[in-house]
Length: 339
Image (tube, rainbow, N blue to C red; front, side, top):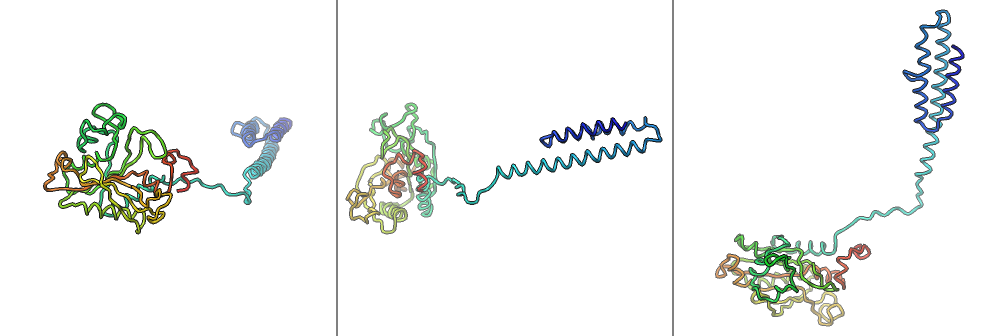
């Protein structure tokens, strides 16, 4: 029995010394000290040992167990210390190194400009309304007083899905849809993406954004339109900004005008930014054509109103002095991080 115990102990100690990871140490523990382990099997066979030597054999088995458990604990402690030291070397923190900069995204220049325009008009009591980008010809053209033979409906200017459906060329169809609902008075702006068959260059894109406004109520005059746009220009470009209205033609408004603002770089004196004129064109506007009101189910004898439209990209280009519209769409981080 003594020889057997000595053999078991030597085998166990040899395997403990050969173990290089904690998992192998655990295998040795199970093999020799587990419920079905070799040392445990010796204890279970004590019933076959002569009664007079049974205490001595039990003592030998316990001493062997204690020695193996001590060897396992010591080896495990050495092994865990080595693993911890290796991990600390790998994860060492050099406090003299520059910190890693957290690259946090932010709003796009278009989004910043849009939110500012929305803030201005919401402050004046306007509602923000959106509509479909794929629109019926009826809403995009017919209900806006643009007949079938109008140049704006040429395929060279408009993306057609079929003869009755187009990619909207303006956000004015949203105005027609709101007027059709007949819930008067109306004070709204309609921002959104629009599409026109343009070549990409510094000032044009086949896909861009517009913000169009509409007011329908009783006793609305051109003076209301002028006052509204003056407030808008001063809020957007500064309190010293002046506005100038120039006669123009739009099928859905009569009379119509284009609006210039005094150059906010030179104060109207003339500079490179305003091309020496002292003025910058920003939007088109006018009083809603009576025929447009009729087609949308509103009595032009009782109600009237005004509409205006401004390009969102144009505002962003002016406000941030960007000279190429393509920069807004190229997603160059060097450009975008300036905002």
